[in-house]
Length: 333
Ligand code: NDP
Picture (cartoon, helix red, strand yellow):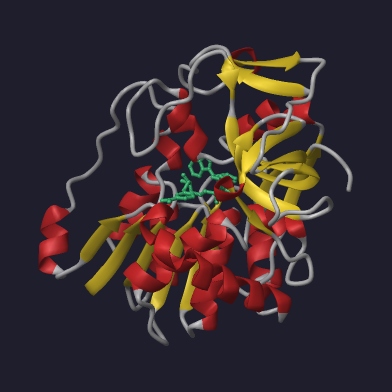
């Protein structure tokens, strides 16, 4: 049973040295009410960077020299819980290991007939729910409104843009590669795309938002967001989902003070975490599953093979290596 430990807290960009692969002979033994799960897919997520630093946040930091944990999709291979049988597919927040022992409250059963099991870590899972509740509850998009989304080709962003299109909005996506621009325009039918690494962000945002910005779904923060927020309309909604551009910062990053603009525009700026909507997750998963099943929502996955590649895949999130949801495939099923 192999596992990946956090052995050093990253300073700045994480590196391979922060992680260690260990191997133990034994596979965990089961007690009543527990199931043994073989990991099939493991999710790497930007929020994990926060947990790797020792700082207190809405979620406890990872302990040093302990197995990392995150979203896992796996298959039950032994069960001492009457609600689960061998062969069931499940998702839960479990260890970065080949095998995990879990109690039923830590996992949810998956129905592979609704969507492929890997989507339980992406579009029909935590990132999809983040897009769904952030956009619909805080953004409240109306037909004809202009929505800008940053980090637009990732797990959350690509879902936000598509749901905004379903609601009849004009959607502009901001990303870091030409391949991502092409994907958003041609496959997901975004109205406009901006490559923040090669385009003049200020000029492009202005050009593509002649009627201003009604909703900004912010996954990245920093200068990209500064430029978008200058364009907000009366009663605009700014949804603060993530600030990935500063997750590796070693000093506090200051930006322009836009409070005056929020006053002038009677605008709303609101942060949230997907856990705020825990009571409604089931409803969200049902809707997302239906949209995926009926082809209304599309998704991509970037899959690397091998548990040992998980740190590399995680680090890749901060370099923009992933188009769509970044996953690690740990075993076949
Ligand atoms: P993504 O799949 O979007 O992967 C991260 C992407 O961020 C990269 O592919 C890269 O794309 C982009 N990126 C990396 N560094 C920078 C940078 N310096 N400036 C601009 N873009 C950058 O991840 P997720 O969809 O899982 O997460 C997206 C955001 O949502 C993150 O900020 C995350 O923390 C947040 N989040 C918040 C949740 C909540 O509850 N509030 C829950 C889940 C996620 P590119 O090539 O375009 O640069």
